[in-house]
Image 1 (cartoon, rainbow, N blue to C red):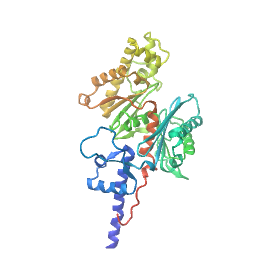
Image 2: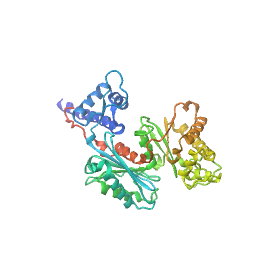
Image 3: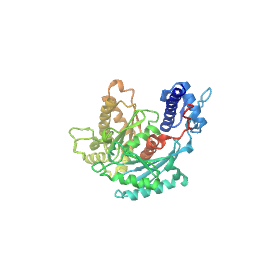
Image 4: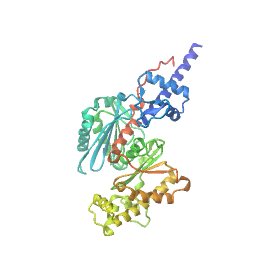
Length: 421
């Protein structure tokens, strides 16, 4: 009989630990949450949730969050909970085409700081990593605890172009962790160079390194802290010198087959259009990128040496600039309507330099979206401009580390006795 009783205690302890991991995982992913929000997201009963939370609070893994800065409501204030801010930190790095952006936050989703530096487009990885290290050292006046990062944190990294995923490639040796997400092999979008980047970053920061496409990370950042915060299903479209996107489904990045989800720039927008560098014809990138808009403006007699000059002309009321943006926005809205019909996101976020044109672009996008989307979805989709700007990729790297780090995923909680749970 005693043996039978003992055999049941092990599974009960594992079940309880599973409940704790679920609660801790939600706080890692979402940041500050109320008990009601934890209950809704976890699916645990009220009694079980309150018991689990009490244990985590008693053990110091979970602490009361900062007071809600919003307007005070009548009645008892709702207490929010968060992970202990001192328990770990996450670093985000975005290696853009001509600049490096970094950001850092703790596990409570409190931003420590962000910084950027430009560089020549042909700067090798070692030079870019040097810049990243310099920027990280400047965060929070040099107070970022890099020594702790290796044991309790991670580095999320964004790069330009498709990032392939390996099936399983995780290992730990002497405190070093290389995670399977985003490591490429020869023949991938980066010709195997990302493996070298992982080694460089791991040796410099002594922490797990996770790599993904920087536009996809910007989507995750907007869903976590930016224009789509609180929306579980987000479609992000970045209109820059290239056109790319990202999908957040149920609060997590959707990568698709071989990491190719979100390549919205290569959906056909104009079947009669010109060739695209991907080998297709009339892709969205050929009609709604910065270069395409400038080319269309010049073909119609406009005079702009760069996009800043185009925006100045637009601000001055240039009719040709407005018409060019209307055409581009119509193509964008039509493509988005098709994607919405297939995926059903609740929020669409537009980012990149082209989105800096504001209502001159967003207006035509919204009109085309309304005209082509299914009537049932028309009032259920919100279109918003991006909120995080160029820092989005680095913020997304932070979010990636908080969501998927193999160390943070095993966030330390109070020890459970095997036989008494």
